[in-house]
View 1 (cartoon, rainbow, N blue to C red):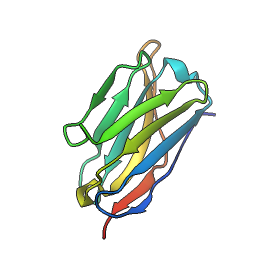
View 2: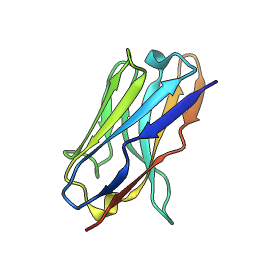
View 3: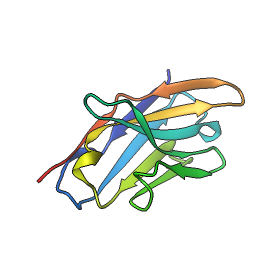
View 4: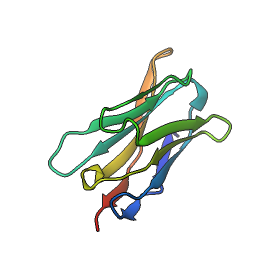
Length: 118
């Protein structure tokens, strides 16, 4: 059974930091591209960062210079380190897994709430 379980969200003041984790199980983690999306109320889901199976990394413009995505294949976990957080970063952050070869997924977690507020 495929599972993606996010953790690490919470309430943080502007300028603060959070580290999100996404623990994966039920599939061969190492061959999947892993992505972090976020969805704020009334807005479309947007891709924040991705790390491919070969550890190629891309960020949304809004995340560049502030967020860092990483993966630990031994622990089947992907991380999102977020710094210099802004109120506009407030959203539910979701982890997703996608494999192109072979074609599998995408799989989604339930999300973790991040609220940036003073």
